[in-house]
Structures are given as structure tokens and as C-alpha cells.
Length: 180
Image 1 (tube, rainbow, N blue to C red):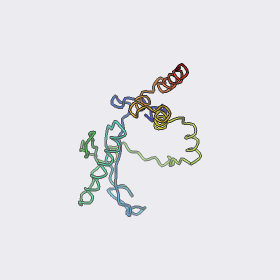
Image 2 (image 1 turned 135 degrees about the horizontal axis):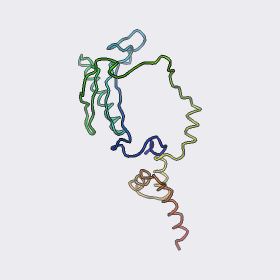
Image 3 (image 1 turned 45 degrees about the vertical axis):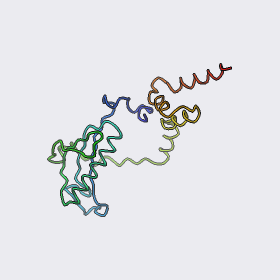
Image 4 (image 1 turned 180 degrees about the vertical axis):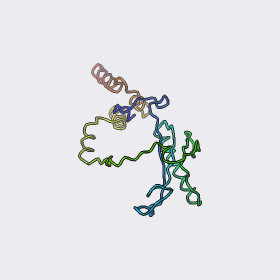
């Protein structure tokens, strides 16, 4: 709902409105710094890629499952292999899809000319001030001002293409004027 409300994507993740891949690598917090190398990548653990995730919940669950898998492998004395993995909704595990021979298989090309992206507090404040009402805020307004059930508020907000929330408010406002 949030990405749709700020025109960052369309609804219908199941039809390709959102498709994401995530990369996961773990390392011990004490083993970082310029002198530490692990699996050929300075300062980082070996990366695995999880493909074709179609919801924020599946992204979160896949990252947690893969993090836990990698920690278990490393604590058991194993080595994390560079590979592509899959995740099924509702699962607690990722599954191997194919191996990776090296960084070239990830189409990873570091660019030393790209500076880090730093978002300062002024930009954050400006963006927050210009966003308008976000879905969670809209839900709370509908519940508190109009007393409608949570499920109905969610339906109104999630189906808000074409201004359904505004239409709802207008109908309520007009009906309150007409009522005896």
C-alpha cells in the first residue's frame, strides 16, 4: 500500500508489480576491518542471492531464513558457497537453485567512482513534510473519525485507486447534512 500510495509501484505483486532479489551474507561482528578477509571478499561473508521474491513479507522471511541457515553452517564449521537460492512463501528455509562460480556470475562490477549515498536529516524532514497522508495514517483516521472496522478501513485504503477514500468521506459528509 505504501509504495502504491507514493506512486513507486503498482498494486498486484502476484502479477509482477513487485519482484525482488536479495543478497545475504553474514559475518562475526568482531571480524571486521581492513585486515580481515573471508571467502575472498574483504570484510564480508560469502554472498548468496535469493531470487524472485514477490512481497515485503517474503523478502523479510527469506532474509531471516537465509541468515539463520548461514549462521548454522558457519557455526558447524562449514563454508558458505556463492549460489542462487529460492524461497517459498510460508517456508522457514531457502533452497539451492544453482551454484555461482564467482563474482562475474552475479554481474557484480564495483565502481570506484560511485560515492556512498548519504541522506541528511534536512532531506528526510523535507520528504516527510511533502509526502501527504500515508496508508497507516489513513487507516487510523478512518477508524478514529468514522469508526469503521479495521478490515473495512484496510479495504478502502488498499483499493484507493481513483480516490475511494475521498469518495467515502464525501458521501459521509453529504449524508450528515441530509440526515434529519
